[in-house]
Length: 582
Ligand code: UGB
Image 1 (tube, helix red, strand yellow):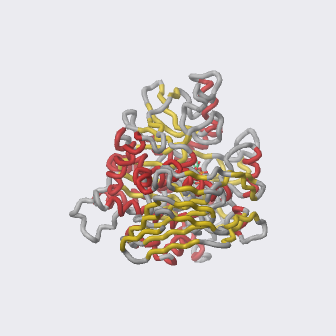
Image 2 (cartoon, rainbow, N blue to C red):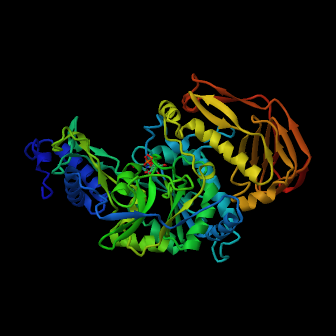
Image 3 (cartoon, rainbow, N blue to C red):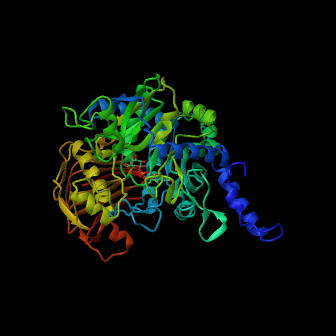
């Protein structure tokens, strides 16, 4: 009632009638109240302010001048990159990982949870399996750096997974069914974000469900919830006590992120960044957020993600009448945000204790007409995890790390139909089709950078999308966690993947590919303690065919192809020891 929500109770009958429904209503309201920093009262206050600004069409960038932010553009595999990886690997034992996985894949059009999708069909590894195996591989390398005093009960590198009502049960089930992919149960913590009440007008009146007068209509509040949840769940305190110094945030579908984390962590350490945004090179006008330093006439300063549709008018109004244009190197001076973030735990924990995890929000009502007084449908407040730096002081050390797309960024967000549209517009499709081929492309390029000769990609068409497709190389995280490590495991000029349709799967930290001729499909797996040298091995067989289909199951149809494995040379070592394969 104090929040001006009398309308919710207008139809309530006298006490004694419908009491169970009334209690049901109040228990839901209490969940919403506890799931939002400051409760529903604070939500309504924030909503009134944001709805009023939105109605007036207030420019959020009023008084702010953009400039190029601080950061490092990394040339993958260069000496500078190797030094950053070495620096990052000294920190990795003090890192914790946070996977935001509460989003439903509406745009993707997939009925399950996105982390269960196979990132590639060669091994059918799901994203969650790849992420956990990557963390375990990093942990095994970090063991060398881990201080001896850590007792056996130490869980190593912890992983928190933010889920929502839409994804929680299925994520827990996926972990249980797979025995946590080899991680200790106490190493992985699920934290669930609550939905927020919808709003029906500019007075921030809360919406009731259409079919139930005793139920608030709610919608997701956005991935920005992750900050409040890390604070309220006690995880920050727990990680701080365990001596953790970094938190790496990543998303549900980006198979390449662990290829760039060690180097990016090295940048955070070297530059002393308390907030480091992993980025990709951005072309002017590209539909991707831009990391921008903003200075206000009143002296405030912040380095934040500016959505691409806001950047052009902001630049025209301040420093560049041509707006969002490329520099003389043909790229935008503002790197592209891919929403994988590294924060320094100490400052982050203090900041969240001060703010309770409350971060900048936005509202985006669909107005019924230009009087902006009525909404077509209820709206709600939303927040984005990358807006955390908006609350930091001008002296906060905030910056970016750029890696090329091929090695750091391969999201799977769009349905096949939307992907065709992106493809026709000459934009990255971000589909399961491109996602799978980019896993292979990255593996092949890493081998090539390490000295292998690799057949050039050829065009591959599926779901009316054409993507480059070369040898299908899957390097399991256990094989190498950094390029610095990988380059020592590939013989100079000794490895030759002769045909673009060859397939190579390598799993195990003790494998060295000294010399190998491959025209077909080869799978090499070595258990821990098995040291395998591949020397003078030639494999020629019928290999695998990647066959475009449209009548497969849901997983097949999302990428538009199936893999027919005609013939595979499989070499597996299940016992520790020293082996040579020739
Ligand atoms: N997510 C949640 O955990 N909870 C939520 O309530 C919503 C999402 P989307 P988005 O990769 O290039 C982001 O929907 O938000 C998780 C950045 O905002 O996949 O449209 C969800 O499970 C954008 O600046 O992406 O765009 C997923 O793991 C740009 O960086 C993650 O949050 C873009 O990603 C992202 O949710 C990008």
